[in-house]
Length: 248
Length: 248
Image (cartoon, rainbow over all chains, first blue to last red):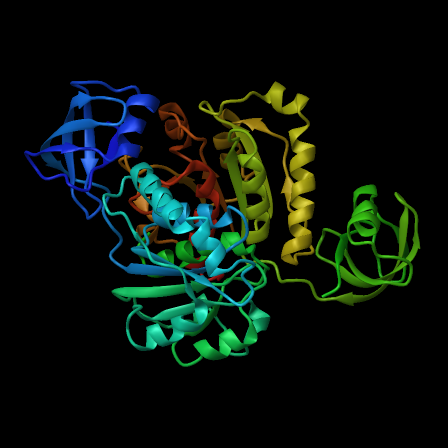
């Protein structure tokens, strides 16, 4: 399989300049050169055959050729609302959520997230997560780069769901003990929707007031009877709902 | 919730000595002391309230009390046959497979595994994986420590499945392009079984001759249309089949 690169400006028949990071990946890591065959995708679902036209360290142009069929997108558009996790764990969640096929990730600072919006801003975390989303898109064969939204406090999310800024049904993942209303996935009698939102909490779980705030907009779901690690929850939940909704 | 410790000899009403590693965890990490309330599980499904009776650095005895209900085991006994992965990635797979609820992990050296039985032996990898299984059992609330089998060459596995040493149905996870017979999970019309085996390949995927060797004993399954990272495959596949078989 030809190496794939992200070229947001790619159109059939055009000559495009790759973004700097993509150019570096092409020349320094893969050591490709003029005349080599590659593929480019525009991040919005289109992929093309292409040929390297000129190379310099940070400026690579490619001649875009015929359209190529990328890995198909899931039929269900799932948005992952993920409470920010400790250290680098959020990086892995974003990488894997993109690989599994989410359309967007909405990072939130929950009451038990051990970080603040200011710290995340200073660390340019959102830019980092966008780079990870592009990298994972390249590896998994998708031609759609999922949107990584600006981090918001969780307090805004239930209202956003109610106002339809986040698609429903909205499933909030909780420990079995956290809510008397928590259903097993099996008990959730919902036909495969067109779009859905999964809400995954931080290491300490959702706070009681967050669960209350979500009561009118979300359904509470527990996955299995064991205690799952917070940083594995998104992958487990996405895999489980894709299987339940016959996407897998 | 009281801290949980692995005490293979625990029986109601007994005074048991904890294994050295458990004793160190109790005294050095959690800094518990005589009279503190804990829980112990025997690794075979039983859990008890207990009280710390005596402590020394490496010798802790506990007084075992009333039985306590651990996290329930899945109704489907799933064995994970996992090709050994690079570096520490196998550690994470074993930790997460235990958390999700497998009954056993059978590590195999596949044709594209970048390691050998001799290297794994010298590195005492199986002992390490057993410690990881115990640690994950403690964290996820199970009272059953899944068995980590001796590593074997993959070549032995299809015969072992045929001889019923590994429970069926056996599902071999493959890339959509790897086998013309590969089904989507959705197309796999199997009612929830009592036991099952999932086979997950190494970074480079199963070799063609391995897929041929498995032809008569395994069904080939692809999970979604994107390319999944090898070290995420076990978690994704376990989550998906548990959801499909209504265990979640």
